Length: 225
Image 1 (cartoon, rainbow, N blue to C red):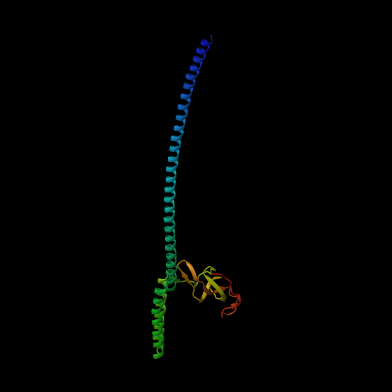
Image 2: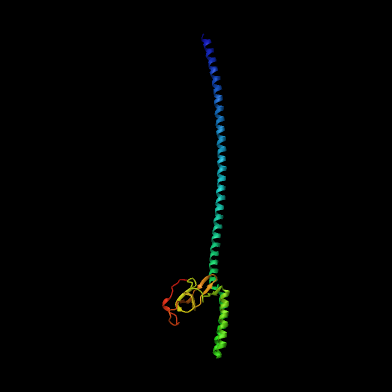
């Protein structure tokens, strides 16, 4: 009986050993596979992170370089713009100083003729010739003004118009309508379609039976140009 018991126990021990060996093999192999898989995954992850960091560094360096170039370009353009502004301001000042060059040259020609007329008047008592010479200067000056767009306002015998006339007095005159311009004290001028200077005029009023005489300056009319 004792021998039979030992045999049975031996078999049980062998069975346990075989089962233990089987369990141990599977457990070890599973652990090794898991560790290897984790190691591979970790290596891949680290390599991927390393590549990502390298790519990120390159992207940062590229953007930094682009930003620096953009900043340099901006500063260059800013300097160019400042130089352009100074150049334009200088040109504007020069243009303002010499914008009337042509106008003044033409006026000098009129002045030359006026000086000749004065010199001629000093050398000769011929007042007819002097008057004729001055009349030519006036016509020349009017022609010069017309080239600049300046024309005289035609006021005589026209109705008083505060847009073009400034009344400085009244004058009784037979045969004239009320508020009709009967005399120009100072001629007015237009610059293209605008009043450059209004005409200072005397306007007619109804005759009261008193003899026609000088103007009554007490009835001036206010106006704004």
